[in-house]
Image (cartoon, rainbow over all chains, first blue to last red; front, side, top):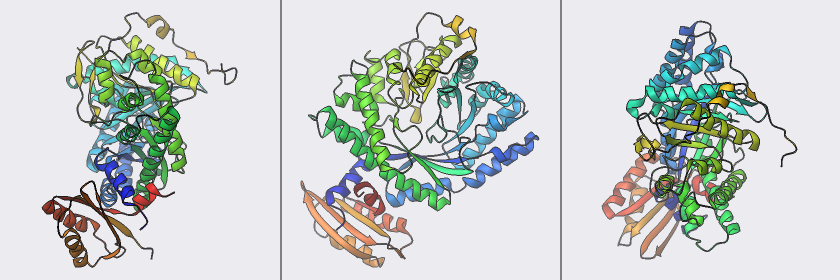
Length: 453
Length: 91
């Protein structure tokens, strides 16, 4: 026999008891050949291309899921940043295009479509300005469309005009979806150093260096890592890292296999494998609980950043060894509303917004799914974005901000978003103003790449 | 043509006739069993079978039949393509 019974049991236990899952198979589709000076033509071509390439995505993924006995939670599509093909379309037309994308997603039965995006880390072109103006309506008027905006990179610096604008857009999007507690903001990510092949939402888009169509896979499994660690309560930190690494290796191998099979059956090239520990509200499927298992009474206390750094690095090491093409964001996500441990940390006053910011220096993304008091001003939101972008720019890593200033709510309230997005305690912001700095505008120059102490 | 193999795993409380009932279904579907191993882990019956599904198209139908049997006996029966175990446990 090729396998020992305990190996077989391990795989089955990971899936059935520890929430090992393929979080997403994401098909990247280039829309650059859909650009057209006639908007109606473009709208039609976009719809036809997406529904042609992805017509079998859901059905194929579901079949593979059953045959291998590993659940695939989401089927998603990422597309060329829409601002690149908008040309001279009007704001109303840009909103209409978002609705077309939404319709395509619903018809195909995919969970999200990402790439209603603009890369404006240095300047803002005509199409990009149109997209920005359309964002609040596009996000509040659609269900499955996700948007992202790049406002900074290590090589270009930070476009503070874009940062200011994003503060205003987030505020407006929250207002326009206030019946749903500002849900539109949960579909909008502001990036520094975005990656082109990220399969995770809301920040997925199909970058300029990608081919016509590609299949990327995102695997998750905080629950698997947590229960692996629980079996070694007295291991030293070197051994903890090793346990995480080995677990990450196995999860990644499973993900890569599933990704390759789905890609092959769809006749599409396999892109990358993104192993990111992405929590869900399911029991024990929490990144915060891994940190607590390493030895913190509550996430957010002293030592949190060291534990997170260890974990994030170990995940990357295991993943990098296991897959031929690691990409995306690969690491650990720390969304608040989707992680029961993070929620508890905040409710117990162990975890603060400042600590979350500090944690983003060492984990894979940034401030994610954080509910803020409804009276946070656009300038304050822009200030939060600028801080996070600066962390990414200086540390040469991706950082992101996905915050929801919940209309009518104040610090201490609890907001429900529902589904995968979960619920979050509303956090307060610093009462002092960032207005003057934000209003200065301009660009923060790109940082030195040497003299880096 | 390369052989396509799947692993049937049976986990649950030990009782008379588990292997007989599972193998009957496999025989009815004309599926060849390549290897079989069984053990009792902490009162739990665990069986693992490697089967040849190269010529067997409808894996989902087999999964359904075995799942129904599992339900009737109070056992968990999974059928998964072998590649997933290969990927996770062999470098």
